[in-house]
Image (cartoon, rainbow, N blue to C red; front, side, top):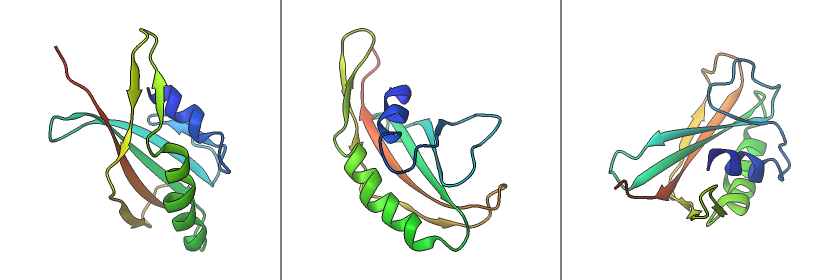
Amino acid sequence: MINEIVAQLKTGRVVNVVPYGMANLPSPPYIVVKPIRDPLGRGRMFEIYVHFSPGQVNDLEDYLFNDVSNLLDNFQSETRHGNTNKIYTEQEYQDIIISNDDKTISMMRPYLMPSKLF
């Protein structure tokens, strides 16, 4: 599902979108998609980190709250096994992070993909 989320985000205004763990990050603005385990055991979480250059706080907030929401809220995609997965916003966000290694400012918004392991 991470590849589908990356592809969907690339259709927005910020086209530099990478999965978490890339050795070389693109220049800002860019987005990092990080899959994590849901601490409540409801399925898989995807943290969407949006990075902008310092001084672009309004652009960062607008992009996270408007563009990312329009692109991902209730986004669904079919897996290679023919199953349909859908992600849901958690209606939360992480406030501005100013201590990134690449000197960017960023914010994060989590999404949940409900699933059960059998």
